[in-house]
Image (cartoon, rainbow, N blue to C red; front, side, top):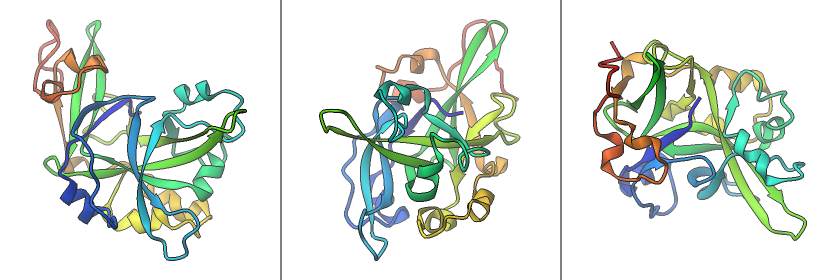
Length: 234
């Protein structure tokens, strides 16, 4: 799964990597949590030239048919194995796929009665994209909420000692395919929903300072261990 992540990469790197038409202006964020806004790249609605745009979406997908927005609190992740058929995600999988911008994420390892947080990075801390789905929901008063979920898959060798699931991290060469909304066949997209190569990832134990979603500074990613557990990652 994925319940917290970071986005600290300079805007110029995001502009180049995600082929955005203009430079994004985003603050450094060390502890992005569910229900907060997240940065996503998607194809502009109604355009034929597949121009990309940066959108800020609520983390926690609210299906268009939902009666209450609270359902989004339980839909922060979407299992890649079932997104083509699960009612909450199947429409977005066909027509509203996006890239969710990040440069690291957190996961908690349960051991010896404690939970040790780990900070996981790719390629030495370079920005990357989670496979994402987005949806629009309208309340009875006509207010629109755009929300998103991160697609997950089985853990790779790096993640498996920490958790049995991990977010789908897309290779840059696959961004165009994931964003190509003319592709509706799940069989063409399912090969993208695989674990990221283990040898390109590093997991570092960090302190429980990150546990509080109100904390949003460099101390979230500083190395540390939970007292009494010692070094939990080999």
